[in-house]
Length: 340
Image (cartoon, rainbow, N blue to C red; front, side):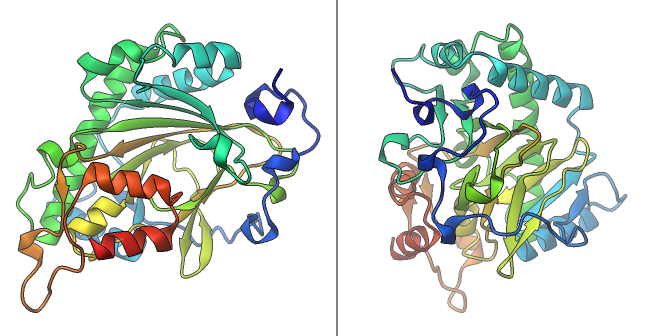
């Protein structure tokens, strides 16, 4: 029989302490949990100007200064966002064995349900979260392996994935214009394998001892996050900034792949998730990944004799393998991409 700390945190009713394997070393703990709410990441209105040039400028400024921004008037309906979040929360409210069963239909394990991280058995300490992860392309290939419960999961999440792929294309084209790349540069294989990750952070009896997610940068082109509760923090100038949810907004962040293609002009910020003692938090991250065999390298239009490439070329699957083996450690990942 599994001990309590081997079971998903969401299965611990009325837990009154943090199990030892979830207690982080002092230097890894979240530190202060109250923040100056005047400091935050930019909010970009995608329909706020008659002149598209201003939107491009706002997006590029936000990506350069923060690596993070929120978008409003993005074109995804509020009803669809509400429906998607409802089925995500319904899934995480199910019994742990049922959640695991719903994610075990593919022998290749394309759909996963896990606690803390996919490296649970090798971790020195664990994270206070349960996670559901599955590919979103192609829908014809992978939808059959998505959870069949809640009953509306596949129907709602299919529509949600289609709309977020469109939003991703819209944002990437704005970034193309800002960088001086041809519109559609990121189309095709460079954005060909989106993946959905739905994190659930149950209430924690002592949030000062643990984290929901360690500080990291994403291995994506961009990531589109939907959140309704506080918990996401972004590191800016060696200080953690709370990303307060804007109703029906999406949080966008730059990943390592875009950092490489932009030749370092755009860089993602380190971010993490903290817990709280009163309310559960569910968030949904839509990672826009290249196809596994695609080559990622600085765009030739952004390099020249005065601005030579600072990164080499690497297949995405090789980059991803190294990223995971380094446990998302920023220094090790930066060293790897700088040496390819």
